[in-house]
Length: 446
Image (cartoon, helix red, strand yellow):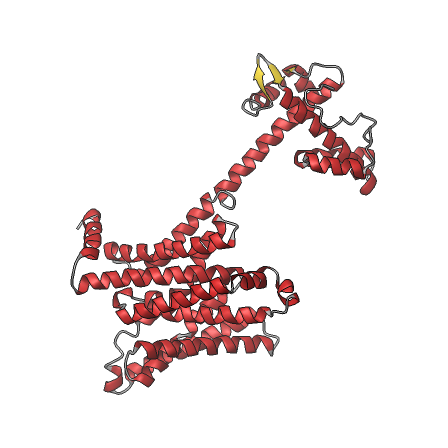
């Protein structure tokens, strides 16, 4: 069947009847619920730098699955979940104990616990397959907890997923301020009588719960990915925690839905499809995020470079005006001589003044409007004030202050200039004896 036919069959199956349609719906609901819950909680996890802890817990619950099966004698969902929860909390306690009562660091203790519990889990699963026929005959399907398989999601699993989602989202909403304070300002949390350890413990319990109920979706191998990748993507797209949580939850649910769809169409496995799709969103944000993406930073850098080039032309024009030259229409030859470069190079730069709002290149002249003259004045004022500052506060010789002032002049706003003037007692000349342009000189020429 073609891709379009498979896609059509997928969406038609959601409207159909029978066991196959119900299995697809259960898989979608389970994957979306797991993605939503992991995404919301994961925002706090990555900000608290507990991502490796999540990976450790994902592997550490495996022996709990095996023990729950052995005690129940069947794949009883409550027994498996309770066993997993107990194993996760025990692994967390062991990790904390190793770190607290020995010189072993956090990363090493996480590696120790992960390896130990995962090894025990594999050993127990191997033992179950070699046990008596009554136990081994019931063990079919336990391997799904290793790699996940939403196709086996049943109504009872959805009940647990919904319950976990409600509990996690309710507690995150109830303790949102306290959790935020404990992450971003532990000292403040302590000062108001709260211990950050309490909220670390809360995150740990919620983390274990989410991992346990999500095992059938992604398995112990990949469950940590859904706790880390959607929040990391949201972190690149927004600087507000509330928006980050909502966006992360949405991306997690979208990845869950998309993973089931991709498995239906291409047969690549739901767990790997979910993780790869989540990683695709991450790479998109990494490249195209307006503030933190590679492309966004590149465009910002180019914008800053263009602004700096234009402002350097303005300061060169101001110096010509100081010597009695024309400030509104400066010949390219004079600008080139002032800048110590070939007229052809200055001409290229002058053309880039077009669209700046400060002036334009016209008939081999750099024509400045009143806004351009005002900006040139502010730049030169900031340059010379900063030269005085460097001479007085950094004890630099007058012939060593120009380079530093030329770099900082592009970032001094009017408020900072006023503060500099007050700090320096309103000087009139710079270390070289040149007049400092006055402020608020719109429309004035040197």
